[in-house]
Image 1 (cartoon, rainbow, N blue to C red):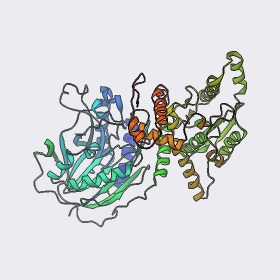
Image 2: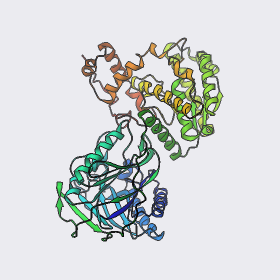
Image 3: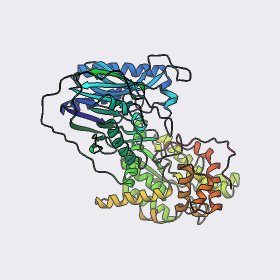
Image 4: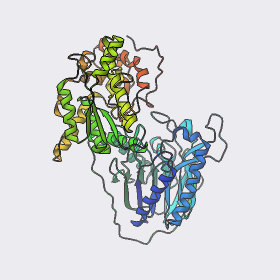
Length: 583
């Protein structure tokens, strides 16, 4: 059987940075060539970054992407890499005029095989996702070909991400065309438990295609999305040959024995009306060689470690890609800000993390001590600025009471943080969690202030779980656990009035989060939630809180998506909305 050494480059890219992304592609291509790769592969839309959103609708950006691809092909050849086929994802434009209802200019989510300084073949994604965070029907027109390239005597069928996630199309077409390898390039965002779903998917598609199947994924972060890598190679029998680490850039090298291509290249139309487009790059198999890379399966993370790493990668990407080198956090001594601080220290380094303790007359001494202890444990910078004088000045002028008095304290803290950010240039992190955002337990222009919310998509019970995991992880490595035990053990409180605790206003978080997961993440209705055994009056109260807090969530900063349905692009409900789940 013919041999082939693949170099699967699981890398990060930045939306809009065509030059920087091209540099990265060339750098990783050189590494691949140095290891003797015969076919070098990069993720979906790696040249433009992903997702490009409405940039796809700008003709100037599509033109720039197409020009950057041509320049990349010429550069690879000029740097001695022209004889190695390189698969690159980019933004293209369909040659035909778009039909009614399709995007103007007919942009396409595309990939190309670069060889000898030219685009040997290009193709567009066939299945366009239009659910969750994806809006690809809005932006792209689909491709209708099955691209097959013959590389050293092996026919390699090509696909892009959703082409594997949906039935039909290129997977059965690859079998009908007699491909020896099915190669899919992807930018598949992370969410909890998706790694298991992804593995099952690739196994199934490999058996359907009847050939070894490669699922090469992107890593890194883009706005609210995190890409976890986890590239997978599965044999035709469904057995895993190789699996890459999560959340890291990696070149996965793999020597494969693959079926020889038929003497006559496949042609015509196959399953689902896919028209085969075949290009021969090298017809003859390689001379037999001693394999060096049989394939490795990276050790898997447990679910909590996986989520923690996703939050770190998402925060690091947002800070770095938006031109910041330091972050600012209001440290209350509570669990939320403590976890955000630990994440920030892991993401950008403690020397780049600045905390401000902003006590009022209602702040307990133990909370002040907990903030100081967090700084001691992590090494972050901490200053203390009392808001009491500011609070007294407002109260003398306005005579506020009740909730208005409580929220004033939060808003003073938000104003203080933004003032320091403006003066010193740090990016402010908002510490709100998904439970609070769901029920509106946050103050507009107060604790919601910030440019990024690292734990925005983490329920309160998840916050505790992540904090305990991070401390246990540190202890196992002989390091100082970053989060003070008292921040984890004490009852959560906003400390805006005497002896206040969260359960004065909210149900126990264990109960609240289970209701929220059903209503927010799974779109369950009132009757279905009650049928799960929850108190009817409590369910009605929680659902009302969620429904009436939509205007607040719209004004909260973006944050890392970790669940199947985060607040943001995943869940789009009208602010003005009189529909209520009723008995």
